[in-house]
Amino acid sequence: MLYARGLHQNNRRHVKPPFILGTEFAGIVTASPTTSFKPGTRVFGSGLGSFAEYICIDEGSVKRVPDQWSNAEACAVGASGAVSWGSLISVAGLKKGETVLILGASGGLGVMAVQIAKAIGVKVIAVVGDEEKAKKIVEVGADEVVDYHSPQWEEKVKGLTDNGKGVDVVYDAIGAIESGLKCLMYRGRLVIVGFAARGGKIEEVRANRILLKSATVHGYRFGEDGRRFPERTKYVWDGFMKLVDGGRIKPVIYKEQYKGLEQIARALKDLEAHRTWGRAILTINEQAEAEQRPKL
Ligand SMILES: NC(=O)c1ccc[n+]([C@@H]2O[C@H](COP(=O)([O-])OP(=O)(O)OC[C@H]3O[C@@H](n4cnc5c(N)ncnc54)[C@H](OP(=O)(O)O)[C@@H]3O)[C@@H](O)[C@H]2O)c1
Image 1 (cartoon, helix red, strand yellow):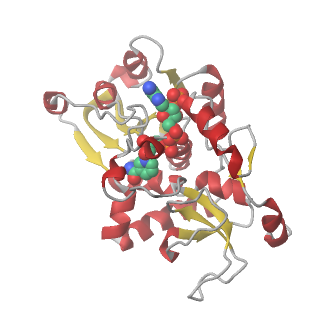
Image 2 (cartoon, rainbow, N blue to C red):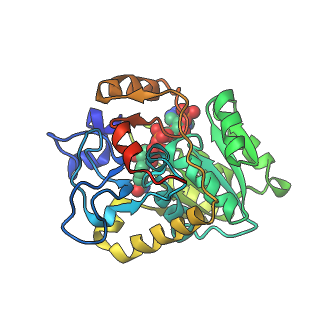
């Protein structure tokens, strides 16, 4: 939505008109100049212009679709799993036995963050916007859920931690840094991942809030890290794919079906109305996938 409206920070430099929307995909390789991915290989990943029948993409931005996943499931994971693994593990240093707060837990990134944290033995408090999403996120693995519409929800989050001391780590995909700092324990860590709740208007944070908690605030920009330090992004992808191979990650696909490019507007309207959870998936050429998918 932010890209479509020119409100995303990347619209200033990397994503300028004319461009095709859509940043995550799964599909079938039709041609490749290298031998890593032969034509016919099912792949998934991230790249601008994925609302299309064909996309030309850098080899480093794609991974082989695990046999157990359909292309739709791989698309639901896209790069979101790697972004969340990098944010939680590589940047915020989340460790077994800690407690993490996931802001934007029901979203495409959030459902991955919840599962990654659970996979390494962390207690997860998820913040979501309604009852249906609360149920979904418990199914995904969250230990506790708080609705952000409830008054003083930050106090509720703290009440769910040992002696009300606050969480060790906040993962913020929505842009609620001051709220996140309220939920954080003394000397806790907060990682800024996105601003989904901000409509393009980024929050200004009172710096003393960081000092008062002796907090560490990190930012993580997956795309830019990949451009500057491809080896670090490879490390992040490898870490996440280990969890996938170990069966610890389940793609989360929103219940509505969207078929064909002409359904993009309906899918975006559902997203805008806060109806969706996990990833809303648009299928474009199911027949091609059926022909290529290995028989399990
Ligand atoms: N750092 C990086 O490298 C990186 C990479 C990819 C994406 N991102 C960014 O990460 C953010 C999340 O991406 P996504 O794909 O997960 O988005 P998404 O699937 O649209 O999810 C957005 C989430 O934000 C929540 N939300 C929206 N408005 C809210 C509000 N006012 N208060 C609280 N929660 C609210 C939604 O929950 P409700 O529906 O319940 O409101 C939903 O869970 C985006 O800003 C995206 O640009 C960052």
